Image (cartoon, rainbow, N blue to C red; front, side, top):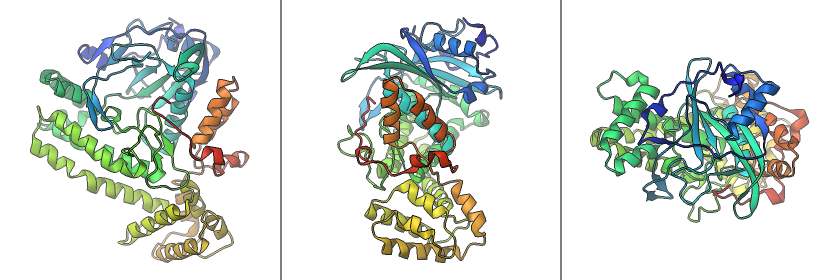
Length: 489
């Protein structure tokens, strides 16, 4: 093991629960692996500075050739509802918990290797990951982080000359994800549905102790935990909706106990505003369409509550579930007011926001560009109004909405300059559009990594004007408007 890791503070926690919560698994080395990306900013949070020796050590460790002696990799078991159908056993089929590490703040973070080979939970899969899916997850998880949306992080990405077979041979890859925990609703569902109620209580007590310690000494700690999960989930989905993000596979096994965005697959940011946007071409009935995400989040919370019924009061759980709808409405309303530059709350604000979204939907206007161009406008009409109006085919309708918005601004006390600064800080100029990700993937598969690195650097500063990167904010080309993205991506 490289000396690079000698000062790393390995701090097992979940691993100490042992079986039946997880099982040790030796990784299958990915041959001829090379480092494509290293998140030096994130690595520094663990006290490790970038160097050639560090890059060599990262490649050796996360290609599966090595593992931490004091921490054998583990795969966790869970179950879940996939597209509404309960699957009794899922689990980490291509992910391995490689270590639990203390960062410089003393907070424990889990390092999870994706693509490390078969586990007991791989079912018919090979446990591998491909370059296209790992690039998408690396870019999007970091893009979400810099947008301020709760998410897992990406530490590194390796590619291999060893092919991985999907519909066709593809470039094999591994990546490392970082999160305080990868516990999900499905972990609790597994032990509830298999009748292992002692193990369920152990898991609940562990989760309170490790991740909701403020409730540790409370007699109703389990209910307080559930209430917290309801709030975090509502706030997360509100942010997804406000930023125009569709997850694509909101199965219960993809719902984080901490309210984080996890398990990036066929995600998509909205281009032209389409309320019923479906980013997963396998979602034939639109269960996980953009406008269905709040409803599905509530449905998933109900399934999580059911898994806690052997331990907690049905009435108390139900009372907390009832708080989801007002919480997500309040959170979303606050976000939309900020996107519109409104610092006070008025009764007609929701109608103003809804009318803009209807205008965008009627005109297939770009979601991100519409809010960004609006951010530059002043309370009095100016020539720059045309940049906003140009986003809409029906300019007269857009002008009428603009007049309503300006009437609403008259009830605000902020100056144009203050409001514009606030709006530009919440309305990004750059998002990870699917066509941009596809361009980076296509280039990387041919050995050209520069488009990936340029895009990554761009997404680290989504709210900044970047003159040299202006073209990344352009509307998608025709070929990039309706890309098919599947779960296997």
